[in-house]
Length: 175
Image (cartoon, rainbow, N blue to C red):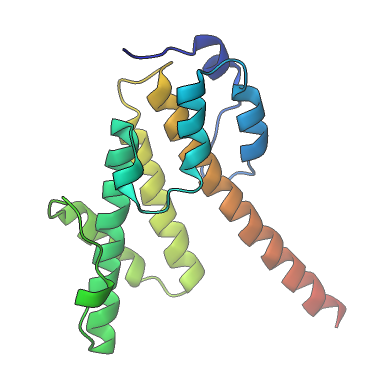
């Protein structure tokens, strides 16, 4: 049976790709405490630690997300190994993953970007869009919290990248 968290979800700040995270992942976990069941809280906490081990994912939306992420990374492996003329087999992740023209398209577009940072930004924008697609039909349920957590972790990652870039630019300006 689905758990609904209307109050919690409606009180969370909205997330927008490319913006500074309005709340930290730790702050998000604190906001969930006492409002989310222990079982669901365990799942939310584990999102930051799952990596690509979709076998550990107990939530359908999270399994779909991790499956998409694995497909996308496999496509990137294929492109990069073709450039280096090496066998990609030892770098590919296994799993019940269908072939995806969409994931291949995303990987090809990102590989054509002039800089690594632009490529990573393009990949994350498409990842964000995939999370938006997974959110369709979910409004105040656990899946919404899972998607929120994934997006929040992505924003935190970009915040770290931006602050590192700003620090580097400041050091260059001062020297």
